[in-house]
Structure formats: C-alpha cells, structure tokens
Length: 449
Image (cartoon, rainbow, N blue to C red):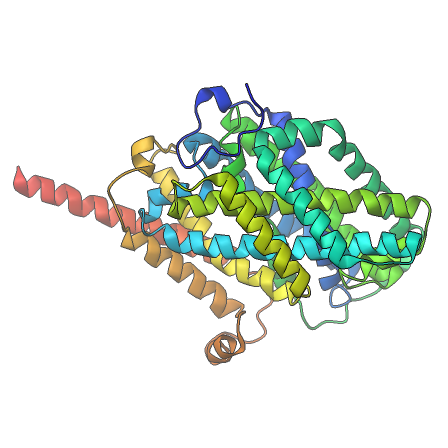
C-alpha cells in the first residue's frame, strides 16, 4: 500500500487505509501540540496571574480542551470522513458551508502565523551563524517544505517523517528549552510572587488555553479518519496533545518570568544568543514547526473539498501553500491573543452542536447520516449561534465596532470561562431542538396513520 494518500477526498476512508495505530496518533498529536506559538501563550498569562494561578489555569484549560479534542478525534474515526464533511450531519450540506468557510480562514491564518514564526526562528539562527537574517528566504524554504509534507498526506507524514526523526528532534529541543528557562529561574521566589491583576483574569486564561486546543477540533477528523480504531484515535489525540500542551504553555510562563521574553517573535533571537546547543535546539524546533504548517495547509485543502469535491487535492494544497507563504512574506504576527479568543467563540459552541447530534444518534454516524438530501438543519444552526452569542456576551472579542456594541450588554469584570458555558448552551439547545423535531415527526406520522 502506498503511504502517501493526499488525494483521498470527502468519501469515507476504506478499511485498507485505516492503518494509523494508537501510537501513530499519539506521535502525530504530540508533535502538533509543540510549537513556539503555543509556548508564547504562557507569556499572555503572566504577570497578570501568579505562577500558581497560571499553572492551574493551564491545567484546567488543557484538560477541558483535550477532552473536546479526544471526542472530536473519536467522532472522526467513527464517521471516516473529513471534519467539515462531518458537519453535514448536524447542520445539513449547505449548513456545513459556513463553518467550512470559517475553518478555511482560521487554517490560512494559522499557516501564515506558523510560517512567520518559522522564518523568524530560522533567521535568528542564520543571523548568529552567518550575520545574515534572510527571513524572506526562510519563508520561501519552509513554505516549500510545508507544501511537500502536505503532499505526503497524513499516513506518509506519520510514517516517513515523525517515526524516523522528527519526534526525537522535538524531544531534544523541548528538553533544552526547558533547561534554558529553568537555569535562570528562582522558582521559590516566582511561586511566592502575587499576580498583578488585570487582563487576563483566571477564567480568561483558561479560555486562552482552550482556544489554542479547540482550534484543532474541526481538523481532528481529517487525520483520525485513517485510524485503526476509535479508541486509539481518541486516546492518541486527547492524551498525546495534553502533556506537551501543559509542558509548552508552562514553559512559556517560566521563560517570561526568568528570561523576560514575552513576544513570540523575540523568543528565537533570545535563545540564539546562548549559542552552541541552544542553536541546535532552536534549529530542531524550527524544523518541527513546519509540521503545524503542514497540518493547517493539508486541512485547508481538505476543507475546501467540502465546497469543491471534484477539485484535485494536490492542486488545492499547492494553492493554499502559495497563499500562506505570500501572506507570511507580507504580514506580521498581529494580535495573536484575540485570534485565539475569536476561534474559541466560533468553534467551542460548534463542537457542542456536533457532540450533541452525534450522541442523539447513539454515538455513531452512518454514511446516510452524513451524505443525505438535507440542505439545512435550522435548529442546530440556531443552537450554534446561541452558543456563539453567549461566549461573546461573556467575553467579547473581534473588530472594534463589534466589541463596542457588545460592551453595552455584557457583564463587567467577568473572570470565569466563557468556553464551557457556550459549549453547554449549544449542546443543550441541540438536544432540545432534536427532541422537539422528533416529537413533531411522531405526531405527523400518527395523524397520517
């Protein structure tokens, strides 16, 4: 069997391609969870929070977010179709187009962010060694590498890339970055130091961590559809992503406290100044960063096939790679924090709708559940909108004109999480609308009998 399967589109994956083991899934999600962009989330938590509160927020957010990710992986392994195609079941075929558009936008954004931080890190190494940064060249090089990994597809990516060397390089780089942070840390003093207060409060810190994880839930099925078992897919994603996330974000907190580095684009240069082993670790994590760009580019192409099922996946991967590389050449990292909150407000309640619908079908999606003639399911769309509105009411984020409007209605000084209430609201409303719809159908059948 060929290991490069990039052209497998929207149809259910056949048994011959259901080959990724639980270990493969753990390697995949463990590698995807480690990123300079994830590390820098820790820089957003302090000094507003104390070290102990920041670590607790990381733990709570990571457990909640990875529970959602594990369930998303399980549903993907159950239905064997891509994530955006999966949403046809709760939302209808045309109803799935709106989240597909949002997912394409977020994946292009992530791809661009990743290529920017990769080029920044590679430029820091190049500047130290050759006194020439060359960010534009590194953007092109790693844009091409991400394209090449995308052309491998998930099976080839895991078997040819992760198993052979990428996972070992990642472990080495994370171990050194941890040493680099701890060697300048005064842990007892950090632990006793109180937070300065302000933004983010504890609940908002939890939302930041959840937002970074939940952005993967729309993509999970793109990879777990190739898994051997539902259990292996769920544990591989939920557990494989959990531990490195806690490690990365916690490391980011220590880097801020010990090294005073709070900007994602400043971190590579700070590490590079140590020279020697630090440069090797930075080079390793820079190469590893291309894995995230691969995942975003591949999933963007797969998501686009929900709109354009007959267009070649290879062509879409090439186009998406070119767009992301072009944006990375033209843009800066931008407001990363608000980007995470905005993703959470869209995708946390959407996932609540998906889980509720899946459970209402006895925790199994058949082919007819996904591929049917239903164009719209208004109840599920209303539940999603209600969950989004609740999130925004509790924690408004977005363009200034939008936050100005919401500011007149939302509660002030809210310090609890917006993610979990919005998930619960969308979940409960979906079950309610499903129950009402089934009751109406039963009465109609009874009246016709």
